[in-house]
Amino acid sequence: MTTQTIEPPRSARAARRTTNWEKWGWIYMRASGVVLVVLIFGHLFTNLFLGQGVRAIDFAFVAGKWANPFWIVWDLLLLWLALIHGSNGMRTLINDYTRRRFRIVLLVLLVAVTVVLLILGTLVLTTFDPCLDASVASQIPQCKAS
Image (cartoon, rainbow, N blue to C red; front, side):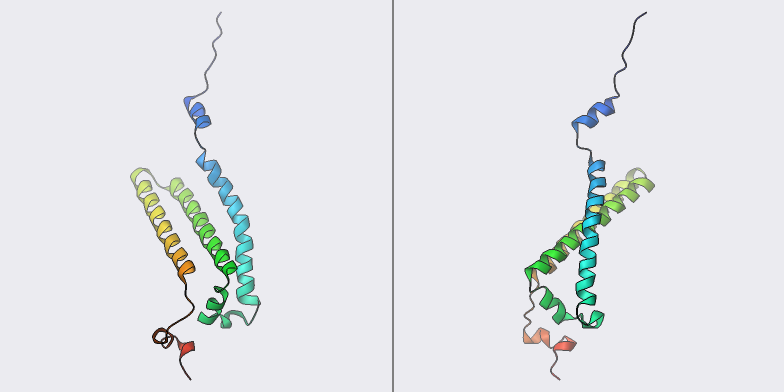
């Protein structure tokens, strides 16, 4: 009687040699979720509870807040983590509930929308200029001369 050894499946060998993107996506979701809780509650606390509440949020409030680089970095982290976190969740849903070509189309659209939103949001946060010239300031209700 001869004994035969059964080789592990090819997919198991290949998995050892490549990066496990699903595992890293899972870890990212947990880590970014914890950081997002801190960022979101910090954002809500400073915008709503310190000061006069939601009525005080206007152009001047945002301009004053974004004059400090700390808040620009805070909001950039919030933007990037939230968009990538949400996109990763949508990717999971697309992978679970769609098939073949439709899945590829939706994934490409998801990546395109995510990249566009990240670029636009980053541009707004990093190029914001609180110093308005007179022609623009006259169009904002709070800036009009009374």
